[in-house]
Amino acid sequence: MAIGFGIIGAGQMGAVHAAAIDAVSEAQLIAVADVDEKRADILAGEHGLQHVFTDYNHLLALRNVDAVVIATPDQLHCEPAVASSNAGKHVLLEKPIATNLRDADRIIASSKAANVKLAIGHCSRYDTTHTAIKEQIETGSLGDVMSIYSKRHAFITEARRLGGRVSVEQYLAVHDLDLMLWYLNDEVVRVTAEIVAGPVQNELGVHDICWTMFKTRRGAVGIVESGWVLPAKLGMGGDVRFEVVGSKGIAYGQVLPNTVAICNDDGWQFPDVQHWSKLHGNLVGWYAEQVRCFVQSIERDEPPVATGDDGRRSLEVIIAARYSYQKNETVSLPFTESHG
Ligand SMILES: NC(=O)c1ccc[n+]([C@@H]2O[C@H](COP(=O)([O-])OP(=O)(O)OC[C@H]3O[C@@H](n4cnc5c(N)ncnc54)[C@H](O)[C@@H]3O)[C@@H](O)[C@H]2O)c1
Image 1: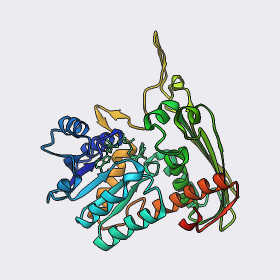
Image 2 (image 1 turned 60 degrees about the vertical axis):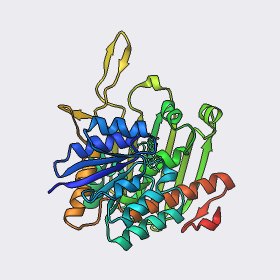
Image 3 (image 1 turned 120 degrees about the horizontal axis):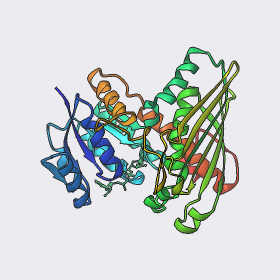
Image 4 (image 1 turned 90 degrees about the vertical axis):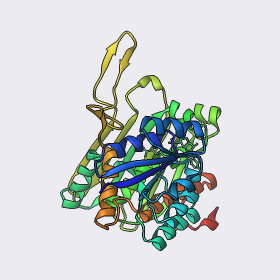
């Protein structure tokens, strides 16, 4: 029988997850909850749902909801995640796991106590570009990984949509840090970060660019370059690429720009063939695979692809990076909340 799903948070990502659940035959969307009644109604209408709430506790009371996807803003992850675990629901929680380590620990502890699955929405782990690199690392074809670099630049329109409620490293770099730690299977011991203020800072009060540099226990180094100042007219989905240098070889991964280009009287356009792309009307790719893998982890009683502990690891580096650029110093890990 299909796993019954509820969605908490019917914004941009709630809608993507609803389409992803629809695309997976072993999953069935049952209910949606959003404090914004209009948003909840729209998403419920699009998916023909009878159960629509402004209070997620009513959703959690439904017996045929086995699992929830939580897609509330970053700083509002903890309460619905803990309540969902306490209600015995498996949780697929959007990244970052939380905005501080205390909340991350509460979320992880509640899922363990309730013996439910907790998966974090580190969606890049379901992208074939990134999994191909992971496979090469695991087979040893690159040798020992010594250096790892990623670049993820989004449009200024995305910064505007979020209106200054998150930093660029919390929103974007956390994807790359998760990938890097997944690849390296190692611990970060030192973090240094630098930020640049520009138009985004002037308009929204959050910096435009952040470079996060780290060193691991086994001696590898990594740099995550993240930004959201690209002009929307670039229209290629953004600029996302990845490089891994090992003792025996190098891997290059290019996720964006999109590779289909169309030009008409409106200028150049680049349809999404990577991110939230559709095949014959159905969502395909990362997000559908994420739901499929999550369902599999429930059915087989296996750990999810990205666990709560994985989510905590990338969050810890993000928090250390913030401390580093605020205090202008290199930060040693493990990071304790008493730092800041
Ligand atoms: N994996 C990805 O590719 C990706 C991309 C964008 C955003 N995200 C993450 O997804 C999450 C949601 O981001 P978004 O862009 O969809 O935000 P959004 O603002 O579009 O939507 C968030 C929704 O949550 C609702 N909400 C707030 N508090 C609530 C509560 N207590 N109960 C129910 N609903 C509540 C809001 O009303 C809003 O509709 C964030 O954590 C973000 O970082 C992930």
